[in-house]
Length: 187
Image 1 (tube, rainbow, N blue to C red):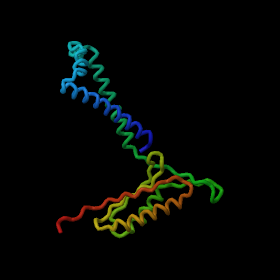
Image 2 (cartoon, rainbow, N blue to C red):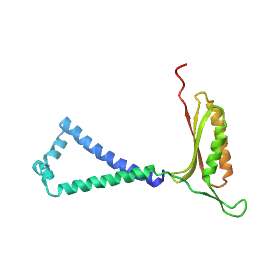
Image 3 (cartoon, helix red, strand yellow):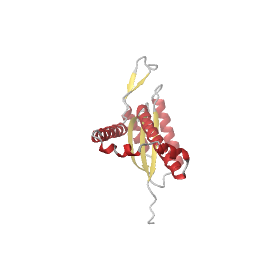
Image 4 (cartoon, rainbow, N blue to C red):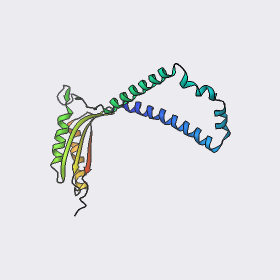
């Protein structure tokens, strides 16, 4: 997920959450019989509010609001579902005097093949993504419930350090996500 997408998500949640909190606070104060809520509601012209749906502009305003909400919802959905694939990473020319670019996809596949060789690993899926502006090698491992977690963690950390050493000067993160199969209860 890009930084901009996460900021937009948080602003939408903040606006909706603030509105719901305000309405909830008004409802609670009304239910408790506090004068502040009753004074606020008594200032409203109930006849005028009740006549709003009968106004000639109401269907247009309602339709425009629905269309705007639909477009905003689909836009947020597409922003969050968009795959954050990363492009190549630039390495400095310290070693050979030239700038090099490295495609992270094959590196993630290589890391996944190394992890798939461990005992107890059933499946491995690899991808290179852009996680909030940071290129990331993400490997998802599904293992047997009897997998030695300490040994697997130690080996995965060693492989992550070797990936960092293979990309000198590049800010690339490595994520290894481990999912264990459930224990068979029938035995």
